[in-house]
Image 1 (tube, one colour):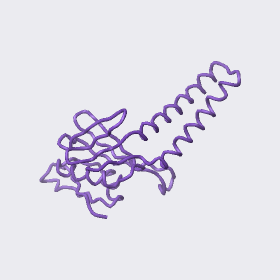
Image 2: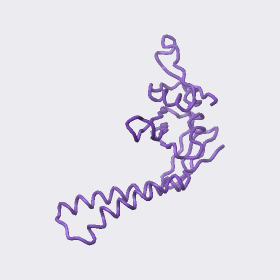
Image 3: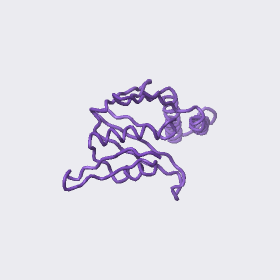
Image 4: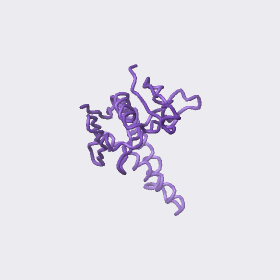
Length: 177
């Protein structure tokens, strides 16, 4: 069993962005008379930044536990997915630059109507992905080409099955990097 957390140093920037956003959009509402349209606009933006700050706080208080039975998020919005119920695995890359030189990855697992997302700022992200990929292989899940490519970027081997024998299903095998 392993436990993984989002390191506070990784969340400082998100907290700062949330605080700046709330100050920049909510501050003028407190000190300057505004038209109803501006109140709705700035108020809506302030609410979005508050929600982003709350989401960051949720990430900070969440512990992701991975063991032989499944993957569990322990925290205010906890969820558990047993590996025997794993129905979908996705690994997406979100770029922050046009040349794709910077960005983050997000692992998404689904099973029995529940889903769990973990992003690459969590400690041990590659380990979590490798374990999930092994279980996806055991369950013979069909993986998207983007997921296969993103697994390869992490050094985790993804091998398509023989399409004639397996009706186009794909599988993964965690490799050693």
